[in-house]
Image (cartoon, rainbow, N blue to C red; front, side, top):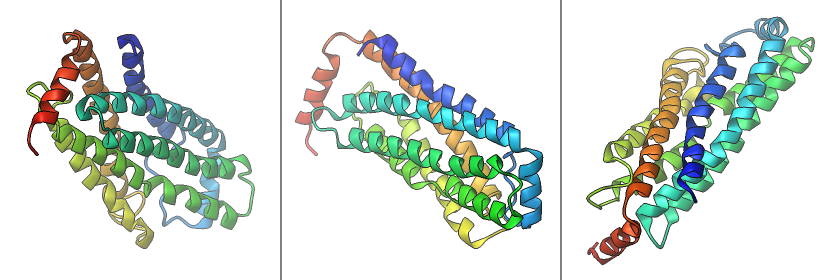
Length: 245
């Protein structure tokens, strides 16, 4: 794969952040519709902002297409670390595709609620709940992806690693930051609610920063890959395979 193709795929991480968060803002989902709102309040929000929600969700849906090439090029770079056998590479790839599908799923419900905003408020509220719960609690694919990548980065023992080790430690913290959203099922107010500090704001910051950090790190890795002497990766792989442990 050429340097230009890999670089273009790496830039998809930045493209995702720009398009996704633009759609999130346009839809009026920052801050999220509070889970403590009554059915009438939720329905009124959809009636008053139906076009913005439709357009914003469409942008977010489009943004998920960038996840696939971005995930693929990260796997390409992880394969350089692992050598002949690449379980972490495949784990990261599978988790990235899983994440793209999981991110698309709740958007369909937001769009459905905005498509007929004149429905009974109880129905609108139910559809809104079905959208927000998986939208925010959707941490398993992100943790699987970040976790596989972190393990690969931190296991790279070559003198000139593919990714800087600090990225591996950042990814571990990202995994920790994503998991408090699990508690949103039990709270409608406070830091664990789906609009709360821990479930939404902290997770959103780490989520967006993950794509920015991995974009930078992957562009750096691609540049250094093609700047290295031909066969350098293969030589490094032989050294690692001959190292005990």
